[in-house]
Length: 316
Image (cartoon, rainbow, N blue to C red):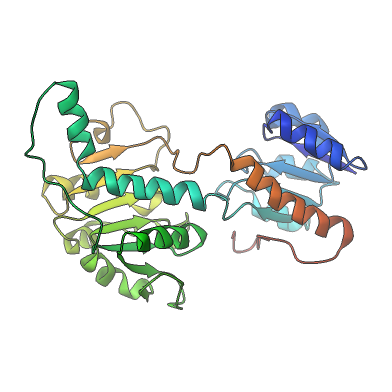
């Protein structure tokens, strides 16, 4: 059985897999261009999920399972995958720890005016006027209470914050004080001091945050987007910031990536830009391959259930 990887897997992890699963033939590559020659023979493909198209799937006549070692599935050719009956699993949940820590760090940064303090330090300016804010007693609204949202909620509780969460069902979630559905979005926005979007890229999340939503937010609110860039109408966002609808936005994801050098986000005083790195961690690949190993056992033995099995019709 042949396992092909188009994802650049760490050397120590490649060694671990080949030593443990001697019955499998691993073909490790650093890109799909390099891996394409082995794709026609592959039973299993390990990928980041951004390098496949209909043509490649049609050539992969022996392919039975695709393990996407990321959570994002935006670029997967699901129609072709469904036609060939290929199983798809992903690494949903592995980003929870680094993305939750990123979120809390940005909440602390904005609350404690770190950008201003760093600039004052650079200028050797002794200025005690920046107004500091505590997280204690504040309210955080989390759009998308999946694995990442749950971890953000857990950490927020350590700061004695009130947590409001949005999900499809409105069902209760641990460490979340109030759960709302999309009908309660504006209520969540009105009540929250910090708003964190962890929403996936789906048709129903396109521009879910736009002018009407910005207008109901607190003037002191901070918006953080670590989900997908499609969730925010960027033109409306800039207008809202200029008109003082809310205080600050932290953006890790954008509609166009990389963010163009001439984009106004880079220079706007009320915007913090980071280059889609909230989920980056040295533990990323080991956590993803833990899921791969569980699913490999299911694949080889036909016993148990796949973790994070994806419905190709729904795309999640």
